[in-house]
Length: 299
Length: 108
View 1 (spheres, one colour):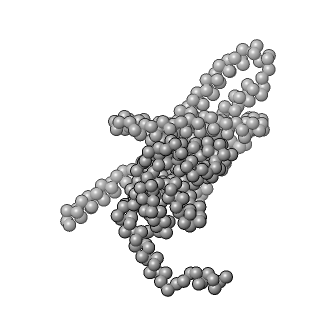
View 2: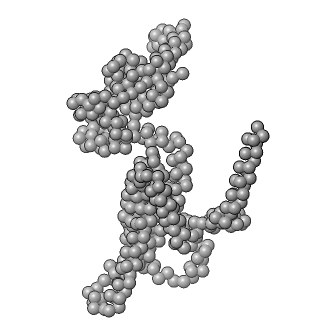
View 3: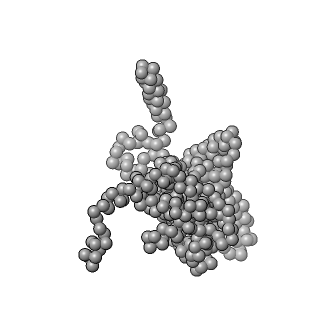
């Protein structure tokens, strides 16, 4: 454990500032502590440092306003993409036979489905990278926590939140479709497509590009102001496109079916309507500014 | 008023003088209290004391016994001396008339 512990402690210390990392590892080396204790001490300091950063309101605002919504949307999109692509994978992998190679229809279908599958993966990977870059750009000091926060949101959205939400949406809005036979039933019966494949898609096509995007975003924060503004505008447009392009994600913008049943008038204040209600906020802000200015002049 | 751990660090750093740095301060505290002093507690408290203006820190030279890594040298400021002195005075005042040795003997 001694050498391994020291290696792990050195790796963990990378989460600290360079000067602090040197000072701490040097102190531990000078004290002659073993690998296990060095690892424990470094982990303790890293945890304290990260906890200190989260005492501020900004990381929480970032988590609630940027990381959580983007992670949630990416997780849903990842599941939808995996679900659609699993049909093609099942068709070609689970039903493959050499006689298919002599079938012209097979080659025709393959020619149209391969670009479809690849483009959907590419789109999802790009969205994930964009979301990651936006998070990295906004994170600044809490960059290390942002990696962890996004991965936790992805994991939670995938394992707990999204299936419940989707099920509700599916039940209320797509109710009549239930009477139709589910032609993808046999695919869902295969454990690989049901459990492992969606996880793999989320890991490889979402988590990895998103983490890479966070890293790129943190470097982009050091660019010149004009370039930074251009990147932020591009990222915001791309994120808006991501949220609005997929019609299957639109249910995020309308109140949850359960909430709609409890508060029937909630539909009038659906999140999508906020875009239309902005003049109210604008006029109120103008009014408030005039009042504040008048009170300043009077005093 | 500073906390007891802050007082321990200020006192240890003051005693060590120009040789005050992370590992030496830790060793002083551990030998005085007989309890383990974690790196996390030490370094976060050093930061807090520096923000309060009670210490100044700078990076020293790297040494071979530290694997070529630099030390974080600590110097107690006038504000630190004043705060530690006030804490000590308060401890002396509050302890007046109380004999902990007698109470320990009576209990055992």
